[in-house]
Amino acid sequence: MYAVFRKELADHFNSKRFIILFALAFLAAMFAIYIATQSIRGEVTASTEFIFLKIFTLSGKTLPSFLFFMSLFIPIIGIALGFDSISSEYSSGNLSRLLSQPIYRDAVINGKFLSGLTVLAIIIVSVIAIVAGLGLRTIGVPPTSEEVLRLVVFALISIAYGAFWMALAVLFSILSRKASTSMLSSIGLWIFFFFFMSMIAGAIANAQVPLDSNSTIEMITHNAEISGTIGRFSPCTLYGEAVAALLVPELASLNPALMMISTVSAGRMLTPLPFSQSLLLVWPQLVSIVALAAICFAISYIRFMREEIRSI
Image 1: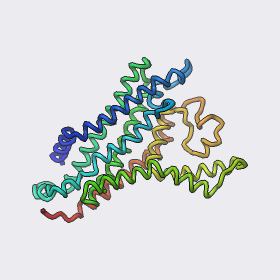
Image 2: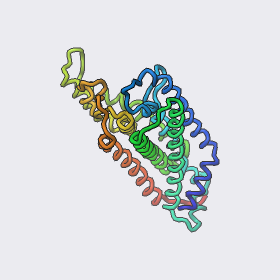
Image 3: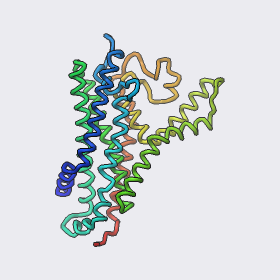
Image 4: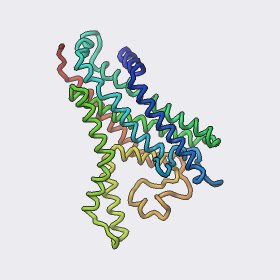
């Protein structure tokens, strides 16, 4: 497995795909720094806590925050690293020659997945480090130990989120022996979850509990509960809730109904939650994302181990 891992890792680093993906992530970091420097002056006062984290969460008038760029680019990076991992070996005929050597099947898929996960982790950690470094130079306020812990967990959640999309792309790469079909299937599912799932959740909630100007607070909260429950079937929603609660310590709850009826705007408290409480708040989302990635990879592993491979 280590030999396959080293070979795949070298191929990733020497490919133009890695340069393009890292350039996209770097552009996201630059946009985040620009937005933060334009918006942070109006948001920060003498009593503001967790100033350093606002670099990652503030959005501008016309541009979204760094969190939005991460939620947009991480699935693209994960899919790009996994959509042809097995199908390219099928189409070129290298898989049968590779397995004719003293290499086990599980070593092939494990080595390929771990190499892609390593590249994904390097890109994510590098981008977060670039934003943190440039933000430190821009605002001149060093992060506290709790802010560093929150950023570390944020990076781990982002890696797990990217691992899910890469495992899904690997699964499609095994199910369809054409790289184009695998890529289109993965991107199509990402578009559905990212753009359409929230619309579907809202439509179902409005069909179950219609709202108008005369709606009571119970109807509004029930509508929000239905929409939030259906929306959590999307890994994009799970990731968005997890990173928002981590990087916005004032966020008191991820329950849409509680946020709706909260006396504080957007469900935020005047006193920020400690790190341990924020971690407990996002624990269900984190476990769900890791479980989805594990399930996708387990299905890929079982299918690949049982696949009939013939020489071309």
